[in-house]
Image (cartoon, rainbow, N blue to C red; front, top):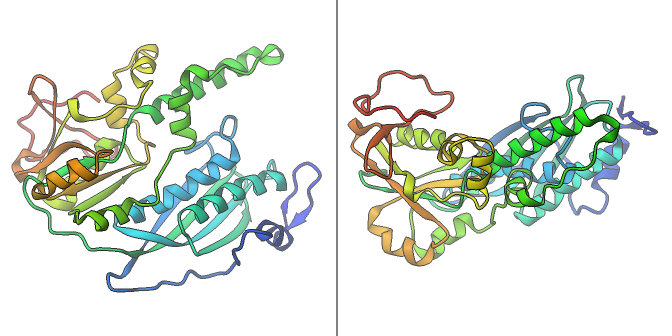
Length: 345
């Protein structure tokens, strides 16, 4: 079976795998080792599909490899684990050359090394529907969560909203470029550098869990925001059994989001709540640790808190009005917060 047949490539699967592993310091294998220490371990899965999660027209393959790895290990960090092993299966279409695959793989390898991943396995299969990237990640738990409690603080690890507008800019420029035909010029994305960068190549630091342990902060829950912020809040509501209040004036927006929102005639806060792909973290932390948060986690923003279950999930806008939070994929069924008006998202 030839795994890369585009252009001048005629490379069989096992030769391709050997070449991809040359100089990486990793060895391929079939199974990830699960090591359970004092706090045990956990696993996460991620699946990225061409045409749904990414567009190869404007996505550099090395950036895509990086983002794919982060999509899997982000969930480990949110569960207070450090990533240790990653297994990747690529579904490859005939339009991809071996050099394309090598570029994608180089992004994965560099990100795996950056985050201390010790095992990195790869398999490849043919695909008739475009590139597919399936990932299974395992990690070792560094610490346990504390129990949820009323008034736990909801903390956000960085700015949001930019990734959504970065994607909108790229889709718009792709359409313009396609319509121009032979007269097409490469678009100037300089004014959108920040939001486009946040979409194509998000940043995730390697000390997410270590800092909690170093400064004695014990989270009660965590969510990785590959999903929209609104979905993350609803997930915390479901896991904790409490209501959640978040405040729009405390949600930090990515630089450039306001300008892009005006250009696309959209509300920036709507994008921040429902855009997704920000690759940030939501953690709930006991309110008694607020002083440590303000001193040693100044890059985190306290955007809300848990509340009594009957509150439901609500957004508090600048004038103090509480609006019911809706999230993509969640049924609009009655909940304890149904007395609140709905926020249009």
